[in-house]
Amino acid sequence: MDQVRHVVKALMRYGPKYTVISKVTGVPITTVRYIIRRKLLELGFTLRIAIDYSKLGLQWYLVELKPTLPPNYFLEILELFGNSMYLRYYTYLLNSKKFLTFFSIPPKFENDFISFFNKLVKLNLLKEYNCKKLSYRRVVPLRVDCFDFENGVWMQDWDKKPRDEEIPEVFEEPNQISGLTSLDLKILAELYRNSFANYTDIAKKLNVTRQTVKRHYEKILQVIYLYMLFWMPINTPEHVCIPIFLQTNSSVNARKTVLNIPFTHLEMRDEDSQFYSLLFAPSIGFYKVLKYLNEKRLIEQIDFLDFENTMGFFPPYNLFKDKKGWINVFEEVLQKILREIRVI
Image (cartoon, rainbow, N blue to C red; front, top):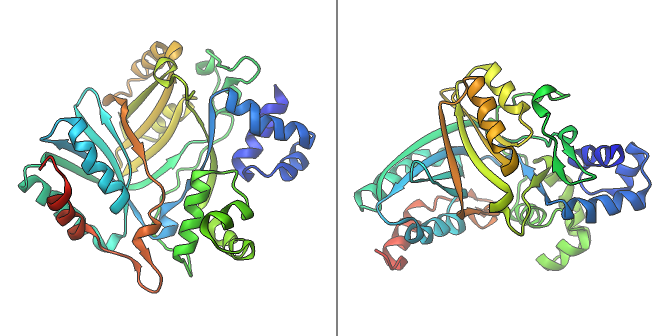
């Protein structure tokens, strides 16, 4: 089991580079390949790149949307936001009965972004919305010491031992990397789609040469801060995993306590220092998580995600034009809603 843990730690740092991982861990390359390509998948883990959107020149916003339409009707509008605008992720919160969304937008478009939602309220598509600028939104590294890779279960004594490494709180200030191109973003989107994709795979998909992909690849690596392992058994996730959206107080101790929970997947802080997190707790350990949070007196707000009304989107390469940069699409999307959304 120690072999697997060493490989997983190296995987989160280096990505699926079997030779590198074998060298730094001392695990034979055939074993490394088996662990990454087969064992982790069988245990319900998915590998994805975690992107620092600030290095793409984009600012995170958490936006709570309360639509006038039933949730299943409003999904059509949200999918339009994801495909034609700057929406990166949405989910429906079961308790508060509203959508939780995350947008990454160019800071210079902030006024138009806010105005866009005001117009949706005037059009009676939204009852209300609440928009919060985030200081950061980052994936939390997997606590490999709390997962039993031999039996494929989470250990239940996680509360008795602290996380063995500190996670620095990294604030993200939008600062676009030099020379960013639409091809860079397309390559990034392909890596987000498939973290195992190599130069040849990407070149074939984008209809460019392998050498071209290789030339752009080093630039892309600048925006990947973690290869995240996401625990979500794909066959029946709703039976084994309970997704939790948590708001706590803003203290350093509260953050440290939440990050100690091995099921914490995402952390974020808004510009008013309010701290939020997203957890994917195994159903068998759900009660213990709630009891732990309650004993620490951390819960300011708690809600639960609806798996059936949740979706993430690829990096928005279609909104970036060479020599022009990120484009303002808010008025265009508004007109598209008026023309094409049949429920209106």
